[in-house]
Each structure stands twice: as structure tokens, then as C-alpha cells.
Length: 243
Picture 1: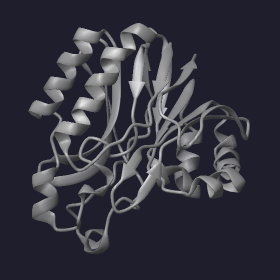
Picture 2 (picture 1 turned 45 degrees about the horizontal axis):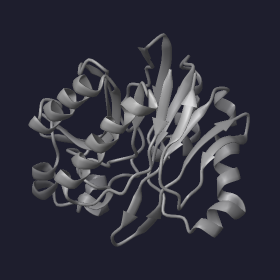
Picture 3 (picture 1 turned 90 degrees about the vertical axis):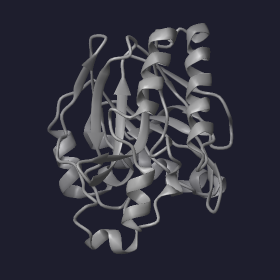
Picture 4 (picture 1 turned 180 degrees about the horizontal axis):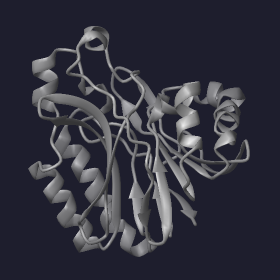
């Protein structure tokens, strides 16, 4: 399987963000990619939440939203699978989720972040903002893949749950806005060492952000506590991982 990790620029404009995904789905054909993966909450933009429930509910989408149908059609046309982060609504509850669609445009997997760090202010006390509880892997093109979102792997009890799930690779979409020098001088290696206990390749993909917080992108493959592949922060393009 050929996976493209794509740290793209996302904003608070959903149409812009969808266009970025569509652009890469078109490009995927020339690169013979089986799956293109973007970062955390990239569909609506990482800073789309403001902890006002009515605002956040209106901004969130359901799994059967028209936007998802458009992305499914684009996957069918490109014959490429897609993974993207989004703020999900389901029966009035809100989640930070990651959806995967296969190359035939079919729903493949939906992972809901299991750690609470995505919530802001009063949302921490609002039971309508929820975490998931399913750590299961999914199968695609003969491989088993697990998904974790951002802070999920920084909690001791949660990372143990991921350790117990068998998979060939773990996909780790996140959002981080480290300065490049800070990342290169130590944080990158700390991330690599943090996930060494998972005993499988961990595929980290970040976003670019030019809003209130500046994020510098970057995509990395961590194996055995080290960086085995990278698209450095600040560089545009994609990182190819084959498994």
C-alpha cells in the first residue's frame, strides 16, 4: 500500500479545505497513491470550535453530510482512498473524529478521539462534547491500520489501549504549532520516543495554519523510537510511506 501523508494549508473556510483535498486526490493518480491522509480537524479548520455549543453544532457535520458525499465521489473518480480529520455531530453530540473513505468511495472507518484535549473552556464540562471509546483497527488493501488523534498518545492509560490493538501501522493525524527550531532541537525526537512502545510504524501528519496560531506542517514516520522518514516542517508536498 502506498500512503501519502499531506500537511496542507487549511483555514476556517470549508470550501477551501475541500478544494485542497480534491486537488490532492487528483494528484494521487499520478503518484499511484492508494490512500491520501491529512491532519486533525482539517475539514473545518483546527480553530473552528469556540466552545459555544450552538455555534459548534452548526459548524460540525454528520457522516452523511453532503460534503462527505462529494468527497466520496472524488475518491471514486480518483480511485484513491482518503483520510481527514473533522468535527463530527451525531444525535446532538460533538466529537473530534477522523474519517476514512476507500477508493470506491465507500465509508471505511470513523475514529473518534479518545482524549479530551480538543475541547475548549466550558466544553470540558459540557456532556454534549464527547470522546470515543473504540480503539479498533480496520483492514484496507491487506493491511491493518489503527488511528489515534493528537493527544491520544500522550496519556499513559490510553496509549496502553493502542498497544493492545494489533495493526501493521498507526496513523497519527494531529495539529501542533511548534516553532521549527524547537521541533528540530528536541521535540521531534521526543515524539519519536513517545510512540516507540507501539512497536509498529507511526505515521504523523500535521497541518499548515496561517491563522491565530502558526503551524508549519510536517509529516514523519516514527519507528523504534527514531525518525525513519520525514517531510520536514516548513516544506510543502507529501511524504510517501509504503507498507
